[in-house]
Image (tube, rainbow, N blue to C red; front, top):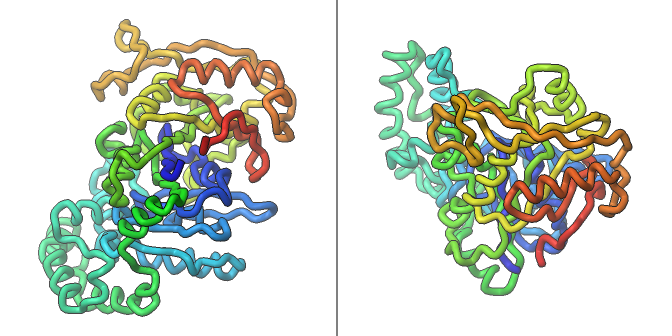
Length: 428
């Protein structure tokens, strides 16, 4: 089972880093194939908590080769900050490989991200302001700077000049900001070259050779299915493909090489930023989920919007990604609830929809149709086998599995590494 993919099944923050960590020493490579430092993974190892934004979470596992592949946009300053923070805590980061074809987030991308979001006013998307969207836009417009360009000053200067020719017009004449100097950007990027050079490689070749050698390669999606640029709740999405299809283009492997797709999904639903959210709660139950689950963004610190589990969304994710296994996280957060509602369908203007409406307007106006399940009061954080869980918790898991389109293979019952109930081997 050499090629395994982990994706988020909701709007992110499901605990993908935790799922990666769960596979531990059985994985040889961990590949990040999309996104940038606009998302965060929190991994708890013993008493240590690590918040990763750009780096693959596999960097915390001894012996694993972490890879930042071509589909990622890289803020090099953030990359070095994260590496230095891990080095200071005794983590070996020497195995990291960065694709020569990955695109670079520059100062002008961050600036444009912030000013354009403010300019949207009430139509703001909820971007993190970290330059992700503008960097991907430059990639598509073929005026982007790639990692390999940093090692050729002439090419780097030509690309920066071409990019800033238009952007400075926007900054000065539309947004009333100062023009950005070419030398300012070029000098900053060149200053990273010496430290960056040993990390850079043809990662597509590296990954394919690893698969040919029978190594186990784990592909780790940033963001999540409902934030995918094509399949998410557009326009309230990220700028890359966070679904299973993005793993092929974002890393340079053939789709047929992916053997298993693991989707991580919370026992309830959360979202950060703007956009439709049918099961969102604005009452004490929403506060209960937020506070018990500590639902605040790893990257931004923003409070997350919280709601009940959405089964049509789970089925949609299973279908789009070809999910073979779900990892259900944060089941422990629900302990103490008398009943637990689950969205089983939507009502849109009096019409029942058992699947997610394809029309954006319909989804925006969707009213959840709930089925309620008995809750439990017991502390389940010590459970390690399914039999250790209260009967009502077992029934809840079984009901979600039947509604969601794939088997529940692991259940998170707490934030620490060992707090998990494994029902099926994720690599079998």
